[in-house]
Length: 239
Length: 239
DNA sequence: CATTTGTCGATTGTCGACGATTGACAGTGC
DNA sequence: GCACTGTCAATCGTCGACAATCGACAAATG
Image 1 (cartoon, each protein chain N blue to C red):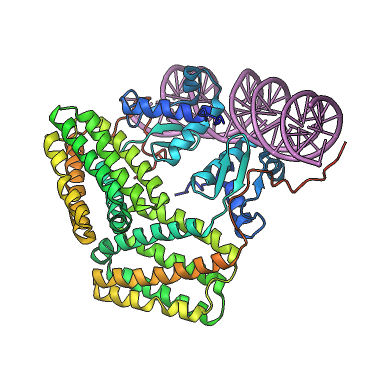
Image 2: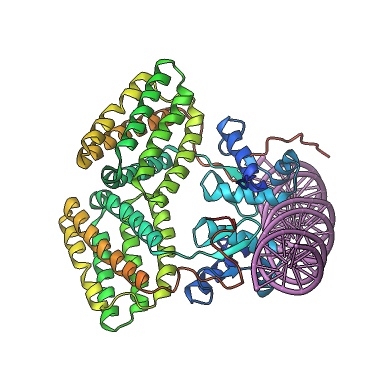
């Protein structure tokens, strides 16, 4: 029996392209994205491009000003902090369901994942480490069992990763990052929800303050508008 | 100073119409929504209709199967439970920031809102009570200060309200519902975050179990919208 | 009679085009 | 020189049209 191999539809593929372009820094925050140009680049008409951009907009990676066009979302440090806050909200809540639903097999997979993090850290492959770090936390959400929360986590992860792509290297010490997951594993082994929450809280607090600090120091994103547009607000009488 | 009165763009207006149609029960869960029909009803072309439906899809009220079309999202009890779980996640997390950021004026507004709930309950206007109930919880999120969480709450509220619209009457006793907010207010007065979390947890647990119970009993939306073909408009002209 | 195949109607995905609106720029008057 | 105004290019929002695809139904096949 042959499965209908789901070839992604056009808008999704375009969205992936844009996503990758953002991740690779080809499209910088605040930069304008014109439908027509993207359409010709993709070799399609504007219709699917529009859908792709709207999709990304719903995921928070693109913003659109009515009758002005689409722009790559630029985060300031405050917005980033809010997103991290939401992430913490989800993960801490998830911790409760996690300890009750987690099987021994799950635990083993999680342990293996942390080992992977350590290996990548030791080898200095921090780019991949970031990806696998998110994969670890995604596992936690997955085991938690609320598919809705999982979907939201995915969305947030995409945003944060795109935000992080800007600052390049994220953590000073990849080995330290990997090791910071140990207490989480330990709490999981004991199936101690309270402990787990505490460890996660600390873990996420460290990560967020770190990234946000870099973001504040790096003034690369506050106001960067090229195509001769006061992007922030059209209303000229903004006083 | 004249404000640029934001006349909503076409897709948003169409989305509102669809939203209202769902809320009024004109569009039932699982029902198909064809672009062309909606377009002619709205007197527009299919393009803005498509955008509107995609918008609603991103908000979870519409689902689309590629090359099959759009359908009104039908919840089963499990999905509803997941959404309530997420809502609890947000509100409990928000409680922490809430007690530290809330001003006395905020508290007064909240108290007034509960009074309104009681009035509406006593007069049996439960439809409006539901709206004002959400407004109360929205205030909590607003005061909490995380705009991202607030946006998410709005989205969830829309979904839940549309899901609730199905079951019609929600609470057996509107007066009891209004009164169930008193402990929350009390915890807020004391600015006791722990207590507030506990009260909110109980409050939300009651609400969710209640609604979900009704949902389970009411087989109005049994299971999967079937792929087959809910083509009901069919004056089937056999040839 | 059960199963497969072919055809048809209905609907979506995509396209190119047109009008409308925005911001930029030059010209005018003071 | 500065503010205002009219024009212009760029781009978005919307439209109607076409081909591709899906489900339903009937005919064909064993």
